[in-house]
Length: 118
Length: 359
Image (cartoon, rainbow over all chains, first blue to last red):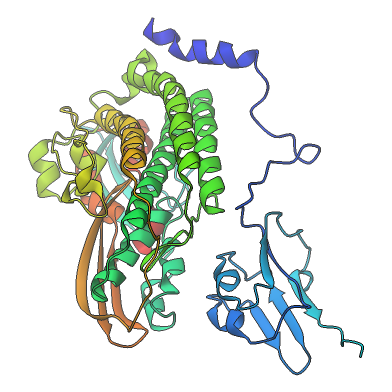
């Protein structure tokens, strides 16, 4: 009967496992392509600054003299543009989301290349 | 004849996902007239073409609307490609069609949930969104994002989907179709839902055409017009007919959107069958010049992009006419004569996307 269509669905789901994920004890499954957060292998970086120029929101800072690379995760829109243009392929898109923070400063990430010992 | 009162409806209202304001002139409980006001969330995205170059602007275009994100990006890319006299490779065209239809699926399922919520059917709302979650997982698996795809670019697409994954997606979608039919049947056959929707806000075929209604709003008034029939991307090679309904009421709009869910799954299956091997993007040379119009079909109806370029890397002007904007006159025609309690349902039958409208 037409009026009992919903009851059928509800009864079926009453005896099934929950469809929701019990966060934080249970984590959602991430896919290999999931755009979670940008990471860098700083030892490969040549500080060319192409990622900074291509970033649509201006989240990336590249300091060539200090050999430092930084990203403001609060501005990053995870578009993957920097990863695609990186000539040394040192930027990677990780599939885990960046941790939350209480202040904007904590979202700024900066890493310096340690001087290569001769 | 009762006393006339004016009830403000919105911009903050439990049923509205986005802010639109309507001044409802009531006589007792009956709506006599509705006066709309929009402009609460204007963001000036069109002006950004002067700051972001033509390739970067795809990211902005996608953010005009969170629900039809992919099709905004696609339409902008089509406009930029037209200005540069290039065409995306065949495989990219097929992938664009597949992603467009997946976007339509998630948008219509979202709408079904909101609609169920509007007429107070909470469990139906949950079940519509349970199915939508599975579609979002397909989007996340193939593009990396759940709402903003970021998979379309000027000259092609940014990600490829391998053929095995495509076939698996079609198999999964056929499975989900059974669940969609179960939930869709509740919308179409349940007596309490029919009682809320049938005969409410009737829009005749002539009125819908005259007021410039677009998308499911127009097709629900028995006017078979779907921009996908113009054959952009590879829609011309796929077999489909616009979903229409003769009644023109809230129920008809519901039926059209539910019919389009199954149509989208069929279109994805056809596109996967016909997809060709090959590159997914072309190399861009030079900058866009000239001006053009591009029209595509979004989940909510026809979107028009006007772009004007002057040979530099920045476009000179971009104008977006979104489907909700075109549907507001039709909504105002539907409202007079209905009960105050039907207003939320009628506003939702338009599938209002105010962020889109105000850009």
